[in-house]
Image (cartoon, rainbow over the protein chains, first blue to last red):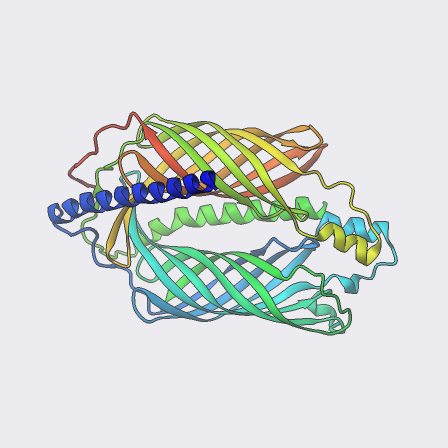
Length: 230
Length: 228
């Protein structure tokens, strides 16, 4: 009991100390704000409006596949802080992992139909653009960037076979929530690149064929896209 | 070519194309004749790092059998605003969360997974390059000084079998300065290690609280003019 009280007191003191540091730091920044002719940072030079992005996607979490794919997205930016990613659709080409190969080799009776992989995905997300900033690259070039968080809904289409084989008897249609974060770097007012990290947690799965509840039910995506501001 | 090697080749090809494209884009902007005005870099870097000691929490999400929570300690010597050496980065996989895959393999197909070594420790030493420095605002209100860095290094990974495997790693990260002596850094690293003539990799996401020992005085420097 005494040790837990001490621990609680220690945590409170630590939080207080960190809080005082942040406050002190903020006061220091205020001094900067007054001294600078431009204010703390210039107005957002690069404002997004209607954004089309196209890029590469990597789905690394499935123990039986690694997915390499392409994605396309359309995002409406309402203001510098909030945007709606109306859709982000992607297709994944799935490469078997060593584990899957071993399973097939060890147990020949295992059916390939038991390994559904994400083939298509769709996300609809709100973007919260938390940070906007600029960095100097070796004091030669100024790079503008923003950091954002995403939250929304997701749809996954899983199938054990490549889509061009046309076998959809064991397809799974999954619906879930999607969250993540990302960063954008601007090249100029029209073009930028963005990196996205997202995770989808499946809440509802409509299956055909094999019915098993023990499958891992989340899917992460790492994306790199080139964005065009219309 | 095995699927793993194929995947890595694609990854490297994509990286090369991306880097090439990064090189071309500024040239295009120059040729297009767009005038963005006279460019001023951000003020001189206000916080000077010296001897950095840090404690990290990290997450290793990619292993099929375990998701690791890791505690790390670093010591980094900063030579100047651009170069630093992370002399030692020692990580201990304190918690290995079973993903349930072993049970699944057993329940579904009666397969007992034997070859699932658990990571215990890893140790590495990295060159840190800090090419980007700047500041950002949270909701256009709070000003935050920060820098971005790249890490490249060598190390070794120890598994519960007792074996140490040589590894190399590369990563990117961002540091947010809270004061002259305290900062927070977040980073992602990819470790590639060689185990029994097989190449495997570990992805590392970490957040660190850093103490800057023997910190210099905070600079209140002038703006630096850059560009043509």
